[in-house]
Image 1 (tube, rainbow, N blue to C red):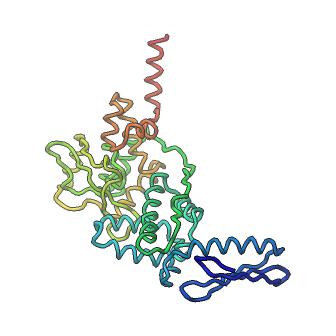
Image 2 (cartoon, one colour):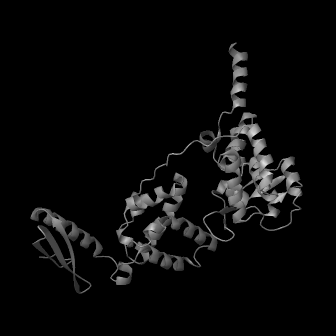
Image 3 (cartoon, one colour):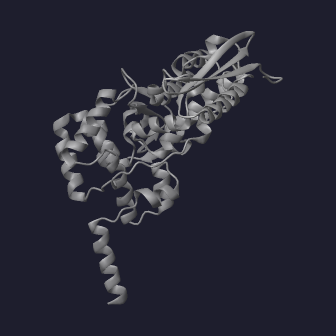
Length: 351
């Protein structure tokens, strides 16, 4: 029994009150075997044999090198990182390492045996946004493309069939003016630098990572603005991973109000990094402990406050480094003040 591309034989036998199928095949000049057992009938065993044979035909064109044919994801990542050195920037390689840690539960699995549901499960376990899932998945897909193109290890890229889903989450609450004042006053108890970081986000709408990534020279107090051009990721160790902002539009210039200028001047700013990874975590904890919201609520509050005071959506989007559609869908929330103002307007128009 055989074909032009591959020689094989199929044997059936009854074993342990069931049927077993053994497929013997010739690969790279050597005979090997694959078997499955526990089938209730010989017919089921024959169907399993067909599946094994089709799988072997698919693998027939893959790399003959056993060290690659049976390589696990974690081992191949070491090969991938080494190959990428000098071809991409060191900061980009660091981003790959951060993203691919999401798939650490699969490091021991053979590269060619990882399935789309296995990848989906890793992403769901992380409880991250769909945009971040897409970023991580794109990095893993590049690894598979590399394995396929340069090492001929895999014939199929499982990343192409991964279905991404939003994790259910509660709506981020916007702080009322009194709540924001209480947070800013109480945050002083956590240290002057932690208070400064919270104040920066409250007055500019910067993300937590963008605040943590600031350097003193990013402030132009004479002209009254901040240059946002990097962020600090929390998934790294030591002083945190400094990398470019989330998107190209996130690189921006943001006005600095006088209250924030005075707070920055009080630090006698010089040069260098302002915040450490520990500061980043403390800022997030302080906001959560005092106001029972996430740090990102400061960004939502900033955007909503601007909208409620008549600032147009296009300008708000530019200040946030987001698209107008994102601002409309994500950041505009109706506060009590906005409801009262709407009630007054309705009364004037229809009363």
